[in-house]
Length: 309
Image (tube, rainbow, N blue to C red):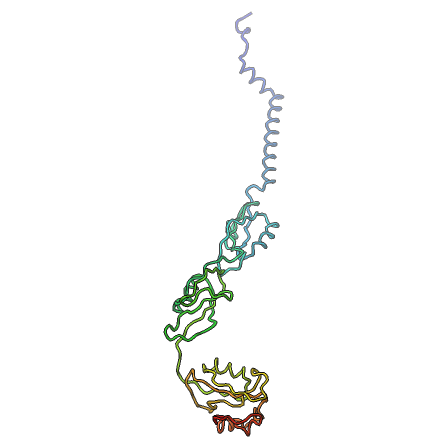
């Protein structure tokens, strides 16, 4: 036997010959193709099931109440998280102020939307010390604290006109004149702080009011509020049972159109339970201007001993 015929092919050559045979080659190629197809189908299915790469527009939740947003979120593709709360006085309580991601941006399904919400209750602050401050300065201070204010009373104080004399909250005086022990008080932002303010006495002229035929309560209001006058002597006849509902039948000084007296002067009244007959008549002014009333006009009382009526 020759040397050439006794030599066997190498391992790699025999392996190559095996895989290049038509039957084996077709089988291997089919297995590779099948494996590649299965892997492609697996990755495609995973991508389809997870919406990989798909985004959605983020709704605008700002200026909506957070309770409404949480209800709406159940129907949306996103999850809502209240991340922070703050307070803005100009906004309603519980309103969404900010969100992240921003409205109308795009995000994947299931993305967390973080909300900053306006506080559900107005915070409290200490009422500042205002007694003795100039009124204009005091309201600037209150504005800084975000409190409202209202002047509920004015008092005469020629030594310190235009200053705050009392500070009232919820009906209680919390700050006042010298010697008053200031009370520590808290109020919610936006609450109303009531003030008593001093003003200088004005001794300027005011017209004599026409009080004839008014009830005593009406005349009293007109004297004090309408003309800044003081109530003087009150004279009642025997018919008066309820002074507040009694009628003014005479006044001093008498009402004369165009006649003025000083602010703060006194005005005296005479009352009767019966309404004078001339009330509402066209000649009423003649009686007031000429006599200011008299016994012939008021038969239920005697003439005033001083002769003023």
